[in-house]
Length: 155
Image (cartoon, rainbow, N blue to C red; front, side, top):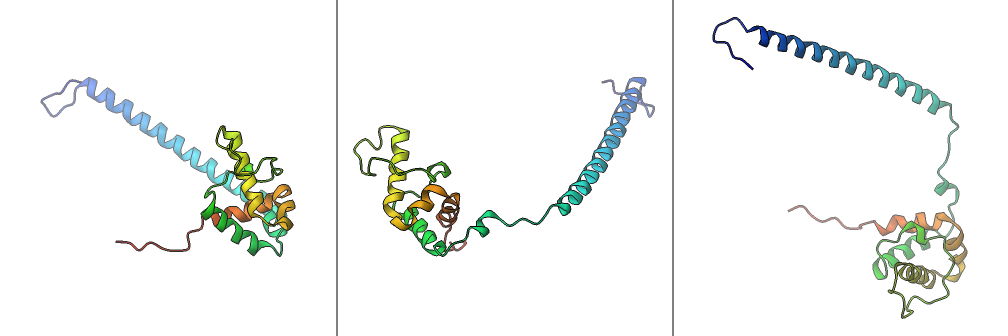
């Protein structure tokens, strides 16, 4: 870029300024169109959402008298066995091998089967069907696993 010493800008500088101003104007117009489009889409989404029937969460519909017991078992399992159980390990049939099988840590699949076996060993027999068949069990157990019942004071 050439810099002029006088008060009059050079021809090159005035052309660049014109181009920059035009680009900024186009960007501002494009931004304004996108904002209007976004606002219009939000209105349409709100209208469609209001027309949908109110739905309850599946969790609320499947509530059972075992919620408290399941939550307690989830906290105990998190402390004593596995703090983070992958969702895929719930709703699995009971493995043939016990959790303390000597080959438990030979592969990822054997490790997962060991965790599933631990779940079945900790959970009372009366809840095994829920453990194997319902995602509800995983939802209830998953909530307390990450719950921290104490607050660490700020220093």
